[in-house]
Image (tube, rainbow, N blue to C red; front, side, top):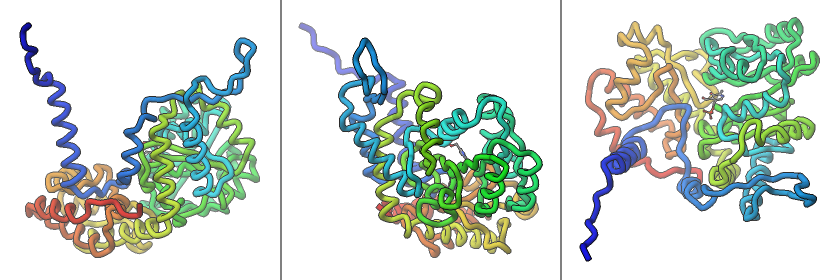
Length: 413
Ligand SMILES: Cc1ncc(COP(=O)(O)O)c(C=O)c1O
């Protein structure tokens, strides 16, 4: 019998392993992340993502098949179903709702899960458009085109995107839309929610709040409280200012709306709900319930401190006279930046990336992940200084790596 040759993994398998390890080391250990769209999940959240739940299905049903009553399409779901129930209960509690679903696979899917069943084809809604900081998904060619809705631009004012309640009230009364969809990808300040909800309801419009960016702040008790202020449904991503696994959720106090959404979810918007994600989400919700009141205000204070450090050191930021921000994001003044350093936010982001400082290419910075890793206002001043030195051409990558070594372990968990 010949000996079996010991085989090296094929080239592409080796490449894959190397790429994953390289990413893990670079983004996980050597860089400081100032993207407002991302966060840092706890070790326990990551552990649940890699459990047996990642291989399973559950499909709660209420059907009669071949003369038998069937309450699930699959057997073997006793623990999985209890995990989902726990996660939904926690999501409802943290958002101060009576009903919640943790099934949406992302913020975009959560938006579809709400808009598709609540608004019939041909319905009209108001939503902030990308030129005012809105989510691209609400631009006419995207979700409205897919779902057969007409979207009307919701006006916001000035570079910090402030809502004028009287202007929006007049628009609501004139247009009488089927819904007012609030929420933005570029978001600094809360809406005057009660005033908007009152007029929207007066003209028969539902108020739907996309909290993708601000979910961690809302759950932590800062920024605003959509359901308490009368919003009909709140929904969004679970991985931006909220430190959950990537995914989505929704919550409401209206059982009638919840039934409509829940009945339409499976097979219209999704099928498998990714049970490992749901267990991980439950863990993150527990962490938020325990630590949110400390975490969320620290995120806002850190973001303000970072914006101030950047602005005062010579990189112009918007909103100085308004305290820069009340959220986990701050905005560069793109024009001012170009005048000062000869490049806009994209050029700046490329420059900083070489030194291990990660910002987005569209003009935002944020402190949610830095906060999760334990940084406070003093560290934000240091990060600001590293940014300025990097912009001046000093090589600061080693200092960035050394600082990141000191802030490796997630806090608030
Ligand atoms: C306001 C808003 N809604 C929805 C989404 C989509 O979220 P996800 O990437 O989780 O699908 C985003 C993503 O940036 C967003 O900013």
